[in-house]
Amino acid sequence: MFRLTSIESVMDHVADFQTFSLTIVEDVVMPRSPLPDMADASFLRCDFTGATMPDNLENGLFVDCRMDGLRFTEANLFNARFVRCDFSHSRFQGCDLSAAQFEGCSLATTEFSDCDLETTEIAADGRHGAPVAA
Image 1 (spheres, rainbow, N blue to C red):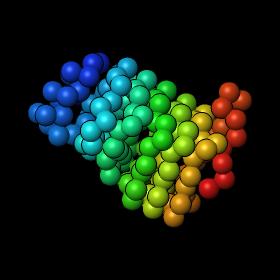
Image 2 (image 1 turned 30 degrees about the horizontal axis):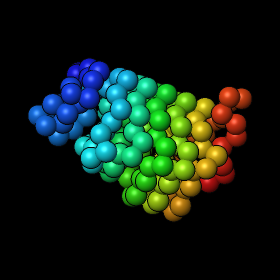
Image 3 (image 1 turned 135 degrees about the vertical axis):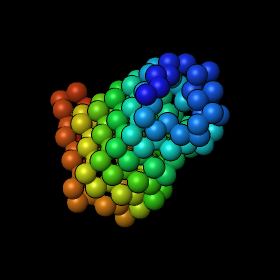
Image 4 (image 1 turned 180 degrees about the vertical axis):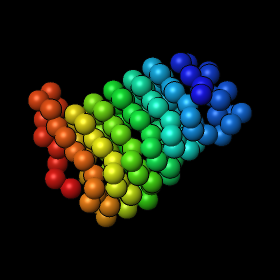
């Protein structure tokens, strides 16, 4: 498993492996360029604002991340877990969110359209307010 803690280490890792699979990324403002596969990766306190997200985030863990204004289109987020993430003004279109978990996330201005939400868990806490019904 790799642990990345700077934008330089992230860029080197992407150049070498073209994936974040089995990687832990901490405290990094992610580049605006398209990001590679994030399946089975963990992101702690990262800022994804302005990034182009990949199609595969399956089994990913995202904790205290800023994900403002992102677009997820036909992405696989099966079993992904988001804890205290800010999804303000983000949009999920045609995504597989089955078994995904949103815990204490800011979702008030987030749109879900044509997504598989049947087994998605959305739990609010007092700090972030109630989520939008999908």
